[in-house]
Length: 239
Image (cartoon, rainbow, N blue to C red; front, side, top):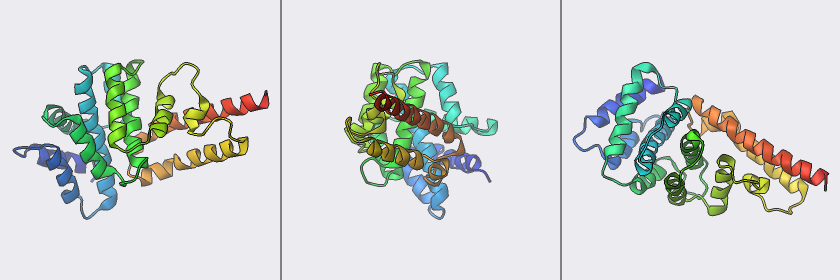
């Protein structure tokens, strides 16, 4: 049985509940998949992405076709399971619990408990990918994403690095993209660059519980990291 079949069965079970609030969803993930930690991580990531995407759409007030396509780039949902994914999306959107409550619960479900948790960064990255799909991150989306980062315990400097990968900040500072202080020796820049590339290797992402499709997002992340490193390298060479 594929992860989408398992996720579909799970959504059917949860959405048939009388309340099906965020607490019910989180507890159900923990309970239903308690015997398979790897599957639980993958389901938890998918549930978090679907639910927080719904909350972001509600905060922004509009869902564009570009955002729908961006969501579909992250999750290539089998046709027979699209209805179940839509049910979870609608459940989260209708839930009277605010997005901050959802973010806190999803952080408990998916996070390590430490600041700058890699899996929570992956979720934030996916949300940025959806938010910018129509060409820009709107003000309400930006406020939503920044607050999500705070709840996820992603430090401000680290958040700025994530933001710089996704948003055209004009003359975007490549040092911000790499998360390293300007003026550091080039050897330290190269060491930081290599660590980022290693941390974002597809095998590591899959081991964290990301679905195979998310590798597309990781590819764009690596592209931004490469571009920043090359910009610094060129600048130092010509200095």
